[in-house]
Image (cartoon, rainbow, N blue to C red; front, side, top):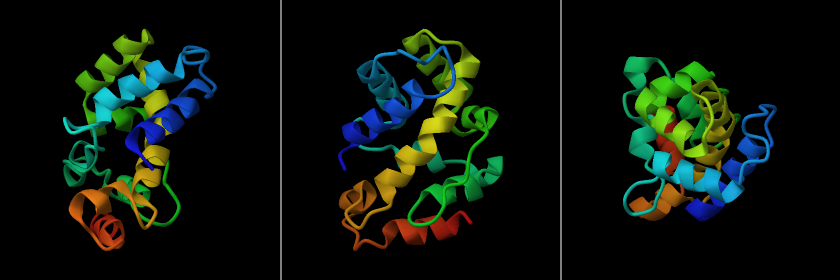
Length: 145
């Protein structure tokens, strides 16, 4: 699945969540804001931004559950800010003209699904980038558990 398809799927989750602040937002605009948050300069998923500093923040098990196969653990909205950084969450909120709390909740709703879908099938984004054999994400997910 291409990154923009994943971002649009995540944007649909955000637009359709229970928060009135995100209901009715343009899915393309949400996807663009997410792209600035989790994509690298080459337009691929910036896995380093998502899994960096996990052991220091105690979020390794949560994010590790998103990688590869298995059930995805939920992430608390406050942990999204720890994971990505308050400044990035603020930029995301400003771009969508929503408050910081709504931005954290929106990202908590979308990130587990987007990362899981990007890394779970045999022809996933990360295996394509690394030239892997389909087992790259499963091995990586075990590192964080």
